[in-house]
Image 1: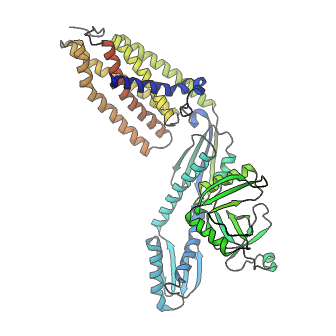
Image 2: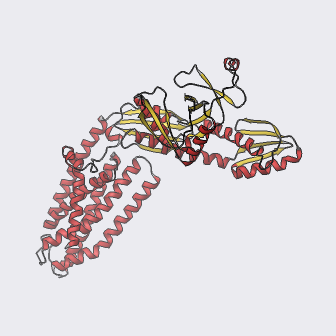
Length: 519
């Protein structure tokens, strides 16, 4: 009895999960975690963006990094300085000239130990050239694409946009679908920013003549202020603390009730930040975001604990946006919007209405067919079918699955397979009764002997659905998700719930079954 009650409880729970979707007016009376099934872009309308990962800019940054690491490796005093000249980078290739011919082999060995197989190293006389291997470039593109997708997802989710669909497309493109979003401009601005934050010391030894001429000393860059681009700040190129060490950032208010952004560094960042502020008291340091100086305050005292505050005349929304960008991380490469579409909800509304009509007509025809063919057992099968439909919707809502047009197709297909899962045991029962087996025993034998067939058929469909989900994208995945949920609910309702209801109907007696035609 406890097993039967457990089955009934699960069925009722699944039906209740579907109530907010099927009757939105009742949604406020349910817990917050029971929500209606969200509609996809094709049903609800919204915005679609196609972004391209700027691999050229990424390779340029990687080449600059290769340049810096090559220089550091050769002037490593712990291993012995190797004298060189003409270190330069051009078109993805870093080259240098070793002054002493006897040091060429030693320089190549040190560079090989530094970069491993990620860099191709060759020499021509005293000249050594370095470039990333084709395999490493391919891995860089794939890694940048995967990281960009994850960062874009975190940024959009942090903005409160519901049910975004974000996926890779064509090797270096990202397709974003935002159901219910009419104006994607704000989102485009946020996901398009690289949000690369670094901390640099300010070079106070730069003369007014150098500032006027725009010729920065070696190791120094003139960076514009974010709020006043015409004002330049002489900033050392060396990064003292990187935004990669940032653990959290939030919008807040300072003592003057002005919006600011608070930052919290991880252990490594906190140690570097404490060292920076301890060794350079009364000096300025620049907070740089995407090549522009947010602010350049004077270090009044050492800042320990890894907590800081960024102020820069922010509005509250600006502070929130910056906090989201810093918290979600820096994009590994710039993203370019190459296609933008806004989809109206009118077509989706028509599709929903037509889908409702199709489902209602189909269900009515199935109900009539099952009752006509199987009598009382047909009524039970129809009840199980309706519970199955409700459970598909309820479980989809519980897991946050988005309903699309292909998803509706998956529901219709599932209902058809569910009818088949009921017919198999019923026909087996018919055969047993015709063979002279009492009806109560025939019901037991009919379900027992058909369960394996029903299980095999549905598991085959589940395997196909999982393969579609793994290798498919967009609409195909929506179809696969709905089909997978439908297969599981079908097995539960037909093999377990249907058997319980029939047992209660039989009530332990050899009742006459109306659909059986005796010879």
